Amino acid sequence: MRGMRNHSLALGTLFVSILFAIMLISLVYTPHPPNEMNVRERLQAPSARHLLGTDNFGRDVLSRVMFGSQTAFQVGAVSVAIGLAGGFLIGTLAGYAGRWIDELLMRAMDALLAFPGILLALLLVSVTKPSLFQTMVAIGILAIPSFARVIRAGVMQHKEADYVKAARGLGAGNANLIFVQIVPNIASAIVTTAALNFSTAILIEAALSYLGLGVQPPDPSWGRMLNEAQSYLTKSPWFALAPGVMITLSVLGFNLLGDGLRDLRDKSN
Amino acid sequence: MGMTEEAAIGADTPLLDIRDLRIQFRRGSGPPLPVLDGVSLTVNRGETVGIVGESGSGKSVLSLSILGLLPGGMHIGGGEIWYDGRHPLHRMSGREIRALRGKEIAMIFQDPMSSLNPGLAVGDQVTETLRLHLGYSRREAKEHAIRLLRKVGLPRPESLFGEYPHQLSGGMRQRVMIAIAVSCNPGLLIADEPTTALDVTIQAQILDLMRTIREEDGTSILLISHDISVIADMCDRVLVMYAGQILESGTIDDVFERPLHPYTAGLLRSIPTPAKKNSPLDSIEGRVPAPHERSAGCPFASRCPHAVERCRTEMPELVAYRGNHAARCFLAETEGAHRHAAV
Image 1 (cartoon, rainbow over the protein chains, first blue to last red):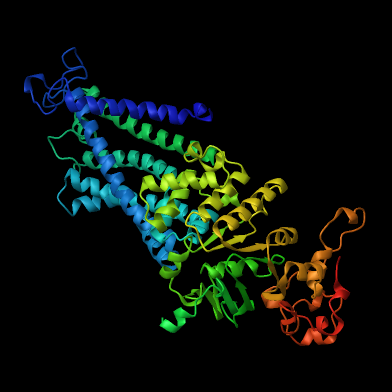
Image 2 (image 1 turned 90 degrees about the vertical axis):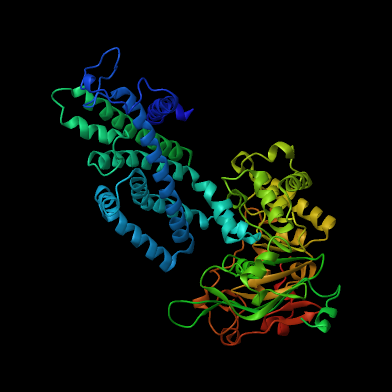
């Protein structure tokens, strides 16, 4: 029942659920095709026909915002998967092997962390052709250190536990000890890190797209929409408001979810 | 391995044969410190052998060395460990020795609270060893695991299978640990303080269970404990360890009724009994010397009430006096055992 008092978890779950529902709906239905241009209806205020108005090409903002959630979830999921895979490999290796391997890998992670995230993403995206795929890989690489640190700490803590020693005494090998004995005990920490990285990924993608280096036109992305809306901020503020609210909602939602999960874990430990 | 050597393995070959085992601890600089200093012991088929000693006597290191689980920094500096006359545990590779762990030689650890994985269901922990060593399918392993849980006296094994360790009491957890340990029907069971963390009534139940398993499966047991009554209750023979050496060994009756070594006598005197109520408990002053504090003479000399000059300068040998009853003490030779007798 302690979970009931966990407001972060409740609010985070609510926000994320809403976004997820919007994303699911956009797969089958949007009020208008998101890339359909109509020059005669450009920069319209919200109306019954266009609930959130239209953009500078006369495209329906609501449809584009809905469609943008697909990009956000895709970027979040893929980059978290890349970060988790890399971080798991490096974290378990460093934590389990220890000694100079640990030292080497973790100093490399420190070096990666030392760069401001957005700067490194900019570098990675600008040396190649900007695309959604490049963006996701860049953000995924940025997420590796945080996963590696959490997983390394968990592995180091649990590899000395009595039950791991007992399992070793009963003939378990290294792979078995890591995957069967240790990983289930650090799963909650990994999930928390994943939620927090999901929000970071969405934020960085929005930033890169805003700078024109992420998702390329005409595909809708919240960051890209903000970029386009900037020029019309005084004339049609609703155009900028919609993607801004979506970015805020998703970053807040995943952050609250991550914090809530961490609180839950701290209490149960 | 030659034919002649194999032919020599018979029913009278000890299941476990440790000869003059030396374990050293390597420090950053300086000579390695002796942790075990020439320990020999045998465990025969179906026999239960006890090792008794205080903390720091090296009894746990001895048990870990058998399974190749020595903590970092420690290594075998000499001697041999033979299992079943054909497995040289002292020079086997990690992979070879791992195949024996849990299958031929299983271990029960001291603290059942921390020796079970809190993140895994009880059933998964039992089936893991079965699948590892016997190659069982998931379903076969589950059936076998439920039989094992029933065998170790756990109620409602089917529902227990999916429960987590925190839902179980200490005694139940130790039963699960024993179920895991005996799951592959090992020849030798090493029990390192199996009842120390348990209540007295639960202790008796766990010891009963170990006795049942010994009788049903013919498992040999190496029982390590600081508790003399547990050893006396369970074992055929006992070795008294002190500062990495065996000070006395023999049958339970010989060692505990007619101790030859002043240390054994002191241990026996320090057991609280109702008869000693209201009088101060006997204790042995001081503590076990750490490896770097050991001197040339008898390791017990500094605490021994009977020590003479020779004890401090010269190391006594482990000498057999009556049959298999052996002691490492100059005084046992010259002054007879009964002078130190406790009871």
